[in-house]
Each structure stands twice: as C-alpha cells, then as structure tokens.
Length: 537
Image (cartoon, rainbow, N blue to C red):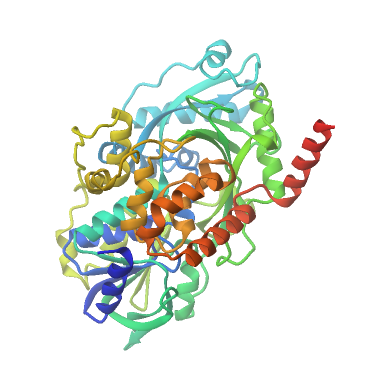
C-alpha cells in the first residue's frame, strides 16, 4: 500500500471513536502517541505541517544531560535528564551517539570560569562517575588543534550525546503506528469541539486533500510546542509562551573537523556557544532571541545572527580561517519557552508545562532529552478520564529493539546507522534497495536506499519533507543537494506517485525554500559574492 493510499484509508476511518487525539507531530506529540498506544489506547495524532517540521528538526542535535539546570540548583531535573539520556543511548544505539564534550574556559573569565568548573564537577558526580582531570592548554591543543593557541585555556571534560532529531521523531512515530496508533501530517486543527464545557474533539482541515471533518475522542492533548497558545486561544486562554529563536551554522567536517563537542563563552556577551560534530558536519549555535515573525512562516537565521556566530567561531577557532564561503547551510528554529517575565531570553526556564483547561491538556516547553518523561507527565493528568493509563509503567522501555542486520552486505557503521534511524523498518529498507542503492550519497553517510524507502513508506507529501527531515541532505550538502536532484528523481518520483509536472513543481518549490531559509541571508550572500569578485580580480 502506497503512502497516499494509506493516507486516504486513515482519513476515511476518522469517524471511528477515539480514546485520545494528540495535536502536534513533534517530539512531544510523538512521545505521547507512543506511550498512549503502549497503554492500549486508540490514539490519533495530527500535525498541521510535516512531522518534526518545527523545533524538533531544528535543534542543536544534542541529547543533553541537563548541565545548565545546575546553575539554578535544580538537581532533580538534572538527575532526570541524565537518566533519560542514558535510556536513549541504550535503546537508540546508532541514532543517539555518545559525544565527549569539553568546556573551553579561561581564568580571566573570573567567577564564570569557576562556576563552569564546579558545575561540571557536580554534573559528573550525578552521572555516576568521578570527575576527570581538566586538560591543560597543551593537552587541549592536542585534542582540538583548531582551538586558538591561548596560554592558560583549560578544557573541562563532560559527557553529552548527539542525535538526528527529526529521525528520532520519525522512529517514535513509526513504532507507535506499528503498535496500533495513527498519525496524519498536513492536517490542521481549525477548532475544538466542546460539550458541557469540556473539550471532546477537534475540527480538522486536510491541507493536502482540501477537505474537512470533525473527530471526537475521550480526551485531547495539545502538544503543539510553540503553537500551543494558538490552540489554547480557542478556549480564550491567556498566552503562556515566549517564542525564542535559536539559529545555527553548518560547516563541512572536512573544512572544520572536530572530534569533541566544544562549549565556550561568546567574546561579546559571555553566552555559551557550542561547536558540535554531527553527521558529516560541524554545527555552531545557538542564538537566543525573541522571535517576532508569524509562527506559520518558515523561520530563518538573520544577518545579525550569522555575524554573531561567525564572531564566536573566529574568536575561538582562528586556525581554520573559516569564512562565509565555508558555510554549507544555516537553519533556525523557534523554541516554546514558558514566559516568566525575564528580560534576558537566555535566563528563561526550559522546564515544561502541563495544564488542563476545560478538558484540554496542554503540554509544552521542555527539551528533547526528556520527551518520554514529559509524555508521562501529560498522560498522568488524563488518568481520571482514561483509566487504561494506570497500566502504563513509567520505567518501561521506550524504543523497540531493532533487527540485527548481521547478514546485510554493509560495513558495521552503516548497519548501525540503519538500525538506529529506522528501527524495525531497517530490514524492509534494505530489502527494497536496488543494485547500487546501498552505496552512500557523495558527501554524506546517507544511503541512496534511504531515499527510496522514505518516499515509499514515510508519509512524504512535499520534496522538502524528504530532503530536510526524512534524510538531512538539505542541511549537509551544498545548495541543499541540488546537484543530486536528477538522481533523486529517478529514485523517488515513481515511489511518490508524482507525474513530471508535479516533480518539477516540487523541485522548484524546494530550491526556493532552501535559498530563502537555509542559505545565508541576502546581506551575507552579497558580501560573499563581493569578496569572491575581489579575489578574482
């Protein structure tokens, strides 16, 4: 059955009685769906754009242990984050990858220098290990040769992990659907149904099929992240969120190689900035700014943010002599942060919020690492209406165990990659591959077969879904992978069921989107072109 046929079948079944409707297809909504199906509920998830379209595909790609919470003395939150990170590392092996991190700190930073060292000392104890010794300037240069040659600079080691955030969402969703859940992308909630003052369902609009319907359920969860206040507005509820934009630069790891994650303070304002090895690239981020544009518009990095992040790179990593020409892509995401009235966005709490209003349960805020725990917090509120949830074990497994793939003719890293990203689907993905499709796409670790599988089986509606979220070629390859589009067309057009006109329209739309929101802003592009012209002369 094709993805479009599956979509039609599910739309036709929406009139059935549901136990739970989940609004929002990011990491929180996906986790709520997974845990609800684990409890035996008939659950439906709807997402107004693509799965993981929002914050959940635009993070710094880190599974944090919660180090930053120590500054506020929130030890229970740190313990929870460490515990959840350990679970994700064990169950998501190949998708969630351990990463040695170093805080690059100098005594001239004064109290902040000592605060960072003490914080990591306590953090290491909470992870269950005795703190490691700090790296001297010489040791730090050996481990990270691109760091500036600054006498007195120390490297304070600690543990983190990196993840393909969008693939984590997709894997959780796929496992939830395999367990009996249902999920539809590009379906917008246009209203809430209420009876006797309590929310009992939703009004839906399918932006693909241009149709609408109403769906009823015993309970409704609003897991729309930064859009949570928009859903709550149907109840005339007061806003609770402060949308904050975080932006990142992506460099090729060949040009900017790192074996460790590096955290350091920005020379201008002392905010922490990270340089993180991820996939076949190095990410630099993040910013923290109030986001003013409409939340329904694709977020973009600003020229000021590019300059801010490049200033950080040039100050701490001078030897590679990185310039705007070395930036492969940029991306920006908007975080759902609970507003407390703080003037400084960076001082706002990243804790999550769960509240019940007129029967609607809203869960928002928080972070990717604790997605399972956040889902349990939301479902716990519903136990009085859904007694089946009493059987849900808070310490049970989260991700399913994938197949071994021992007989697949691939190197061990590639097998591990497929198991981590695709879980139980990995075997079918390999079986669907045609000759040559288990080779990697030049410039990446992605296999050609991943594209065929995603186009066939993972609910792709637009080309951007495929290249920005099912695989990450739009972030990892120059010009969003434009040079590979002819090969992608041969692989995927038939699987998607698109005629020539449809493919060409989607390709134009994708490239326009990439150039507008994932390339350097116009100001920097003009600066780069001017520099290139001057060099040519």
